Image 1 (cartoon, one colour):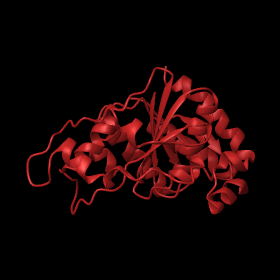
Image 2: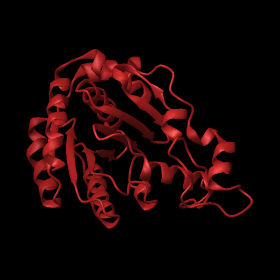
Image 3: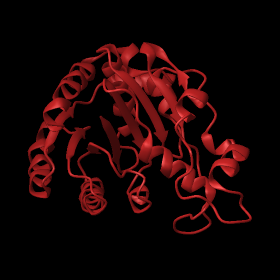
Length: 252
């Protein structure tokens, strides 16, 4: 299965992506975690001290596969060997790739690097007992480029607040436009007094809630120390375990 995790910046999507990847790997799944966020913070959430170089650093490879910058480029470059050649393996056997950033100079980029990254996100396939977790960039810009075509589930991380919920609504609309059919939300940083209102708004959007992560100082400590939340433990881990266990019902 292929899962994209997105949401407004700062809502905790990278923490969720890294933790789910580790927990799924502990269940015996073959997990590939892809950092598709220009901030490139997924490695610390996975507990990887030395992340791989961003794929955009391999300019010769991109020019060879997708076409040189001076001429026409290929829309479907060869990417089937990228995971094996450029990924690293971290704790619990999670394999990781880092996309890197593309200098677009404007809205959207029609260039070899962008074509190469889109092709990888569309076509990366592992064996049947595998999971691809994609930590997407904040907001909705990546949906406009179609990089999430073919995903099985899009998880939107939301927190109490109008901007976070507005972003969730736009993600649902644009995701539907590019063929995503399954959406779920994870609510983060919500107190009891906020939870009912947030759940009601998401229900009206047609986005079911997969789980609610409580405030947990262990998550803050892990983030400040650059460690995986899995190593820190805490109350939130039990909730994320439940979210992991509930994934199957959303993918039927």
